[in-house]
Amino acid sequence: MLRPRWIGMLLLCLVVAGVFAWLGQWQLARAVQVNPNPPGATEEVRPIGDIAQPGEYLNDPLVGQRVETSGTWVPGDFLIVESRYNDGVEGYWVTGQLRLDDGETDVAGPVSVAVAVGWASTMDAATAAVSTLEDEASRSDSVDVTGRLIADEGPVLPPHGADPQTMTRMSPAALLGRWHDVEELNVYRPYLASTEAFGGLDAISSPAPEEGSNVNWLNIFYAVEWAVFAGFAFYLWYRLAKDAWEKELEDFADDAAEGGGEPAA
Image (tube, one colour):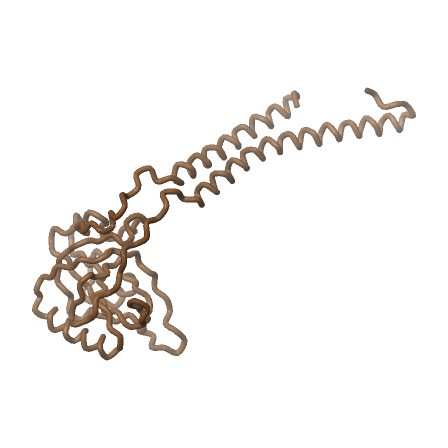
């Protein structure tokens, strides 16, 4: 182990172990939320521009945050999303494009957010609500909307054999592909589940999110893994050096046996 070759190998292992230790510290620093949101923070109604900006992903602590904003509905963009449950009952959401008023965000240019306007138990009721909302949108009156900001569920293909226009997930990305007047439009990645129903629909049941733990155990597990890897680097150095030493002893024994003498001490 004191030979230059193995000392050099030890230095290399020290560098590798140092990198692993740094990665472990990096994971550990992100395992504990130092300044967690106080209990009930999501229930405080805040301006939407204080929580997120268009195009930004919604951080986990902010999912379900109650926000408020104002704007006008864009005619022709009230769309129905199927397979939405309200207190355990399957039904439909009516969604709309809300074009925010100037000053609601720090972004220059038009800004829109997808809004889950309300729930209906049948497709006929949802379709009737769309007609009512279209009439209201044609008057271009500004409306105030309060609700929970929720992360994009991601678009999925419709069930086999279903209408290709069928939507079963609340995805602003999918809705954007069917909206009108979207040139140079800034769009929020999360959507807004309105607290108050519009167009004669039922209010969407959206309880407060459960308070999560301040400790991310997955990150702690990764930190422990990096510590094990750092220890393994030293073990690998010791094992290689020992194997080389045992190989030399075997060579000495073979040489002594070929010469007919006793192996050297």
